[in-house]
Structures are given as structure tokens and as C-alpha cells.
Length: 325
Image (tube, rainbow, N blue to C red):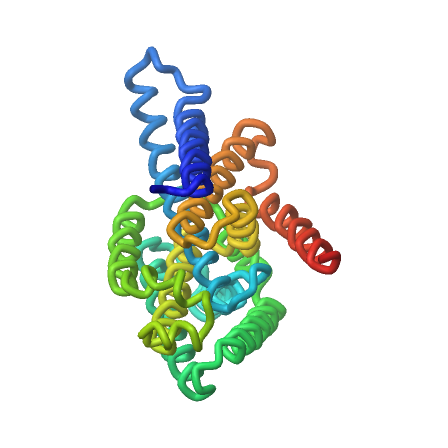
């Protein structure tokens, strides 16, 4: 028999799924001439890839944020502390600075995506696996190293931009802001395959999340290889964020927003529901937000600006409410 809380959460998740469907249909069909098959086909050719990318991004960032917060045992942290956003901006800045904005890597979306994934994946795998072992599997040290790397990558990127040609810098700025325009369908397919592979690789660890959050001693007593699970989950989170960032650019506060909204709405420790709720919240924020960006503010402000401002305010709210407790 399911408890009343589980049944209530299932109803909430169904309602959120309906809202995602409503936002998606609204984004696809708003201001589209349905009577003209050619115009309809042209509109779908432009909008469907954007929607797919937004849904994938919401799923990766939302799910990774819940897992990361559970691993760190802190609900006001975000996976961007692992340094992938800063590494992304550094990679693109270095490419434009050393090779030029007209180079093959800068122009070819497939090649740029491949370079981002390879470099971020290597940094994540080598750095965090090594650090995790050297610190005797201390998660807080890994978080500290991620914070230091974020500052380090940001400092390097800032130094390069100071000596960069102004024209090249103008060309660079468009790639450093999260955008859902000009989506490459080949990148979407590759990203889905990569995410599916990562999910399959850590499927057993994801199933143990409810046990891992009980604490290291309790998890070990229940027969869980705690250190191995945490290491694989951290690598999985980093690769998820790397894929999302490589697809659309850095969106720093999205994970913080959707993960905490999911926890506050569902009020459960079941990670299957929390991850799904966080992903659905992300889809509502991204698809609904992009709908407003395109049809209300007419592209004058990118969605990443709204998310950053809203996320910053929400972060302050979380800090203040924590102090009152």
C-alpha cells in the first residue's frame, strides 16, 4: 500500500508534467499559421530542436543538482561549484584568443561541442578521481577543490580577455551566454547518446541514493561500497553538467532553483520523486521562460539573465530562512 504522501507527490508530479506539456505545446504553436502546411513545417523545424534541447538541459541540470546536493549533504549548493561553467568559458575564450573567431573549432558547432565534452570530461575524471582518493574520500575537500578551480579558471579567462582583440571579444561574447538559438540536431543526438551512457553506467549508484543519504556509517553497515558510489556519482554529475553546459552555455543558478523547489514541493526523501520533480521544474522554467523571452520581451533579454537574477534572490531567501531555523 502506498502512503498518503507518496500518492500526493504522484499527483503533484502529474500536474507538473501537464504544465510541461502545456508550456511545450504553447511554445511550439504560439503565433504559428496552422492553416499553411509549409509555414507550419518551417516553424516546427526551428522550434522542435530548441524544445528538445531545453528538455534535455532541464533533465540533466535538475537531476544532477539533486544528486549533488544529496552527496554533499547540503541543499544550498549547486553543481556549478565543480568548475565546469568556468572551464567552459575558459575553453571558448582560449580558442578565440589563440585560433581566432574564424577558426574551424569556433565555427563548427559539432567540433566545438566535441572539444568541450572531451576537455571537461578529462578534467572531471582525472581531477576529481585523483582528489577523491588523495583526500581519503572526503567530499568536502572535493567541493573545496571545485571552488578553487572555479576561481582559477575564471581568473585565467579574465586575464585572456584583457589582452584580447576587441573585435574577437565581441565575437566571443555570444558563445559565453546560455542560448537556445541555432540548435544543431546532430549535437542533440550525440548528447542524448552520451547522457544515456552515463546514466546506464551509474544506474546502480542512483538506486542507492536513498541509502547513501543516511550517512556513511549507516550505508556501510547496510552493505554499500560508500566511497565507490560517491566517486561514481560525482563523476556522473560532472559529466551531466558538462554536457548541458556544452550544449547551451553556463546557467549557474538553474540547478539551485529547481532542486530546492522540488524538495519544498514534494517534501520527501525518495530520490526517484525528487529527481523527477527537479527535472520537471527545470522544464517549466526553461520552456516557459523561453516563451516569455521570445514573445513578451522580444529577445531583448536572454533567459540566462532571468535565471541568474531569480536564482540569486532565491539563494538569499534560502540563506535567510535557514538562519531563522
